[in-house]
Amino acid sequence: MNHLQTGIEKITDIKVDSTVFDEAGEIIRKGGLVAFPTETVYGLGANGFDADACAKIYEAKGRPSDNPLILHVADRAMIDKAATVTEMAERVLAAFAPGPVTVILPKRDEVPSSVTGGLTTVGVRMPDNDIARALIRAAGVPIAAPSANRSGRPSPTTAAAVFADMDGKIPLILDGGPCRFGVESTIVDCTGERAAILRPGAVTREMLAEVLGELAPPPVVGEKDAPLAPGMKYTHYAPLAPLTLISASRKKKYEAFCAAVREATEKGKRPGVIVSRELAEELATLVPARHIAVYGDAGDVPAMAANLYESLRYFDDVDVDVLFADTIEEKGLGVAVMNRLKKAAGGRMLFID
Ligand code: TXA
Ligand code: MG
Image 1: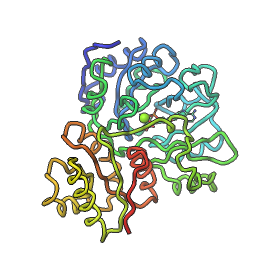
Image 2: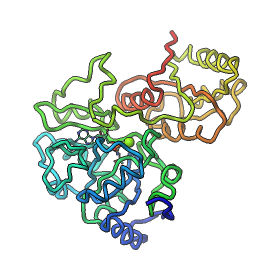
Image 3: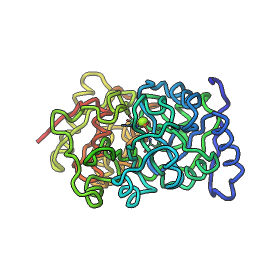
Image 4: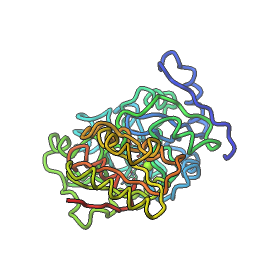
């Protein structure tokens, strides 16, 4: 499956471009892979009932095969083909589907165990993206899809980022423009007594608590990096240059970045920074413009989420040796953003106060 010609189809209107979906649906049905946009990140899809097709996903990503895949469905009825929907999941789906949430459910026998990494449970999600759901409908089966990056790389939030990682490995990428949220779905285990968040995302703990009441407590400090979703134990989201996070109050931020940049430069290393527009302006005299990635205005958490992975990937082709990134408060969507940033940084964080 190497050396395929990888096509990119820009989709402007799912009705106008309906022949593309006929083609894409056929690729999936015949056991091939299609990358597609969702509201979170781009997915790398295969027929979720076809173990051989799903094996191609692991091969294209270079992903360990014990790391389970999420099944994507077009509507509520399709979930019944793959899983037993618990009462708890029913409430989550009623409130947030289609949307950036994955529910973990007892799997049905039709789902190959290679899709679930041998687990008896399966993750199911209904993406809030017309292109994704049109593809699933055209295929007529749930689509198993991880994020469409090479294993260990930042998730792709644009078709160009998918192409950078998957060129020659898959036949088709559906281009739906940049993803709205930019961080992967919230994963909620709905198989136990109380719902547990296995991975934070845009559907926040507070939002889930409103429909579920009390949730299982978040992992306590110290256990924070314990793998909950099996895939979370692997190195994730890493940029090519090592990343360090800088945690400082608004007042001390500028000084903290200056110090980090100066120290790196003295050691002969070229630093890059991922910062707010305001901080970028302050650092302009110290750091060349192409060594600065701006995620948005200071405190704009949705913008930081949406631009995080592109900011990391921006530095793939820029001559930097070390990276420093701004941090935000861990509440609401900020929990998901900081979770991904900490993983990208492999835990390296400077605290300045
Ligand atoms: O937003 C998303 O969820 C994106 C888009 C493409 O839908 N997908 C995504 O897939 O992030 P992936 O494969 O990169 O991450 C799936 C995570 C992994 O950490 C995996 O271990 C976990 O979900 N997972 C899948 N099935 C599971 C299960 N049965 N129990 C616990 N964790 C599971
Ligand atoms: Mg992923």
